[in-house]
Image 1 (cartoon, rainbow, N blue to C red):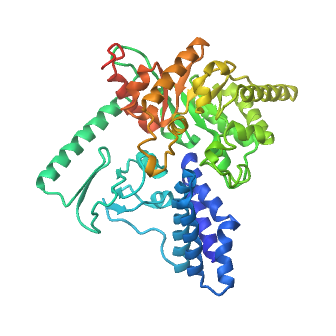
Image 2 (cartoon, one colour; image 1 turned 45 degrees about the horizontal axis):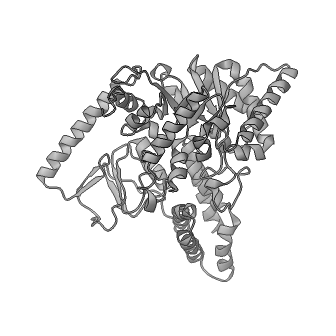
Image 3 (tube, rainbow, N blue to C red; image 1 turned 90 degrees about the horizontal axis):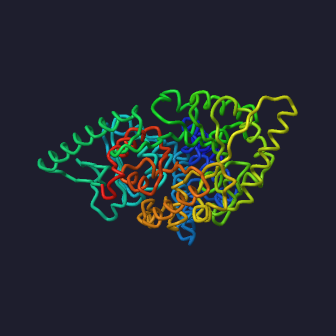
Length: 494
């Protein structure tokens, strides 16, 4: 069994090396679980009692899955799928079975759910899609599917899903048609053609400035999770980088990155952008993004725990290294530094003092460095409600994913409450409008770097709240600019 667990860990580590930072964090969480003695020990005990390895592992993990699914805390309920993934992966190794079965071209996988690693190991380049009885449109797998253009329908419940046969899957409208007739096929083909034409139209906006129908200029920047993403991107297509997730540096096999590693990575990104602004977020670990040797284990509610800036201020030896690297990279371009999960003004003050100390130390050592403005993510409701308390921040950027989660009290990867996790909820829009007005009163700019900024259906509402800067996934540049062009701010009902 130990051999099977080691093999499973190696499989996951190999998969993680192929992924961007945000996706790799999902797999790293699974590796951390697999390396936890508390998970493995019950199975080892059963083996010592004479139970076969396969039966021992199955029973131990089934019990853990049941405990997680029965937990009152929604975070633990959502993690049950990760445990199922680990259970099945180790069982496959024990049985000597192949981890991934090749799919026929265009095949639709139908079932209760799919785990992130199973999705990532599947070759979707030849078409295909997903039809799931469970799942959530805001789950990890749903986000992965959208990023890779894989059509997916979730929440089918007790619908009759055949094991084989022809189906038509429309991920845009959430429609699955089983055993279609000629009329349904023709209608589906027309929708496909219309969707293809729409995508071509959206891409025609990619290299153009973003302007609303009434002539209001909107800044559209991109989110970056790994510098390698920039190799195939043209800086002319965007107005800068509104979010660099620095966590990509902290997922390597060599442990926590040193100052030189960070400096080189940040400098590379800044040089790509030239004079355009680059907003690098300091380490945002914790919640559903654990980092071995850094984040706390077994928090009762990780999303409300020691994460983001809270963790950085608790681990000053790590935070100081990052601040020094950022200060050194500042002369390479138009750097802005963003602090995540800010809740109290005192946190901002302390972070700013630590940055100033880093600058003083570097200058005393004769090391080239530069000052950069320090802004903050607005993802905690306390900060969104009272922006005037954070006037020390040079700018604000709305993290719509977490802010929505906290405002609606609904986890984004929990199917049972997926409909409640709505970034277009009237309360969210009211809060964003109030934040923008409050920020204007203290002369601070506001951007948005969460998933909502890349959703065409949500962009008009965000712009009418007063937002004039968005940062989106690179793949969403065209559709975001097209949605902006179709928005007429001069007409409140347009």
